[in-house]
Length: 292
Image (cartoon, rainbow, N blue to C red; front, side, top):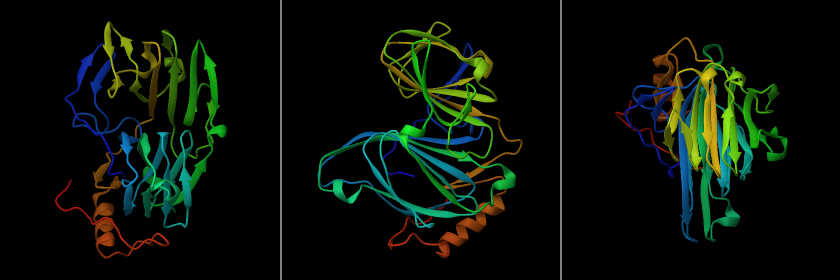
């Protein structure tokens, strides 16, 4: 979770093969496959006296994926992890039964002018793994599968697609892809996708069914197998999705669960401050009230 965010909801509209919306969740489509939340951070320019400081806060029932375009964030958690995430790296934290973490500007950048820009994503866990032990993995940019196909640079940030597999340890069938093109290119990758699928436009534009879509829009496919569009020049998009779960997921604050009772227990545990703490951290984000 970040206090630098842009989450815009709009009523979805079916246009050709896509349902158009802005980031997850929104009312008519709470999840895409196992993906339950997407937070676009920035781009934010911070001066030498402005810093990112998200105190310790808890999660249950999900994995968080942090992927930066610019800037750096220090991640600390209740497992003892203390890692600086930099652009192109993947920070993958699985909360399971419960984890607490903080996100802050690294000490060596706190008195400098800086930028922060990236995506923070929540991926719900399968019901059988919602109460698994928490885990944390940090994946270097050089370990992420990257290749060029038909004039488009593709990066498999997490999951499996195109016969390739990311080293990020996901817990259900999913994919999270980056596509970049410097020239106008037609893309037809439906045969490599499965389950539910959506496309997020970071920069540039795409065309689909005679319509042009621009940055900060998520296009949710009616059928992932019909995923065909045209990238304009200097365009970057992210495609994410996978197999949906048979059960509904409930979200309260940072808690995701298939059973509301798990959320109630987590709320009480946070109120009592009985989650395992983050070493070296003394403050925390209070539980918000009346937020469902």
